[in-house]
Length: 460
Ligand SMILES: Nc1nc2c(ncn2[C@@H]2O[C@H](COP(=O)(O)OP(=O)(O)OP(=O)(O)O)[C@@H](O)[C@H]2O)c(=O)[nH]1
Ligand SMILES: [Mg+2]
Image (cartoon, rainbow, N blue to C red; front, top):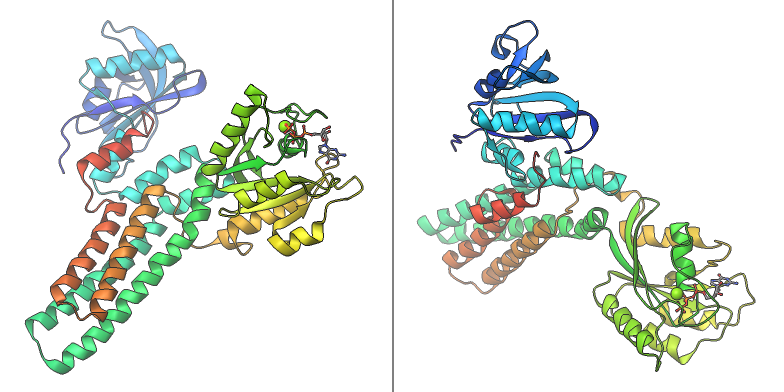
């Protein structure tokens, strides 16, 4: 791919900072930089070895100093975009950055679109789409774990894994085509058995990636968690306890919380998007009714329901209804107010809902919070420490395409079972390869590429 124009943008945040960087990339980047930058030594940027900082000034058209800067030239392909890149490190002043940028435009650069530098790195073949998308995940990482996973992806771990899977499927197609071209009975038998094994192995590889995708996505986006229960059981107290601040109003009157209260937090490295809700009960109060309706709505797209029960009371009919309403999705039962004398029939709840899903806790004293976090970790990570290695799919787009690939392989396996003509099996395999190619960007359309990079920030 040949890219003709040269782009520029501020690579640092447009605001006050120690330094502000203007990045210029494209075939004319040196020429444009030379027009506005004068080194103190008087030597031109290209006369210095690449990747060397050069002290000087940015001057406007009248020759007046705009700012004092350090300039660096990175020669293609050894730069972020794999093109000739010049970066001007100015003072981190909004005015100075704006002025330098407009000078680059006057000198012939075009303002970069969001994500255009990374897009060029992709179009120039320095990185694949998976690695490009990881760049944004690195910038937006909400937790250390998410950062770690994104870095791994950016360094190509997922790409390599996908390349292996793809290679395998291509080999299978080649083997089948050989049979089509030279149909001999015994070769056919052996080939078909081998083909089946290879497809099954590839499928196992994809399923393994998908198994990790749940954790990956939680790390990236945070797990949508909703606290529900009947009024006064201590939902808001639990939210406050986990946040370690008095975020929601707590009172001894049932029906205190009426609106949703959403907060993001990290619990021992696990990012949660936690919502406190209005207690669910039959009520005539107009506002409270709306609150209850909202609670039920939120529950629908939550990934985890935290059902709070009051341990100091016996189980009520409303509790039972709430417990039944979450049975379809992942949930954990918090038996709250463990500091008070317990009246709740905990044993029978554990019998019905499983000991592993019940945590005894006191939002008042914080007793049991550790147990709750331990439960969460087990839920998110599965076996402890798994996050340390392995390849994680963090991106919903990748997840969806992997599912698609898996579906095509299932079709191929059924086709083999049903002794369907080889051509049909090849079509299924090609579909799987295509889906994998859409992840890495090998077979992706311009439209999707544009859509992906539009979510980036300008300057990246
Ligand atoms: N002793 C004790 N009291 C608690 C505990 N958690 C909450 N409470 C008390 O229970 C009452 C209700 O607490 P909230 O957190 O407002 O309960 P809620 O579930 O949010 O109630 P609504 O918003 O009305 O649905 C308050 O008086 C709290 O102080 C606990 O662990 N121990
Ligand atoms: Mg409340």
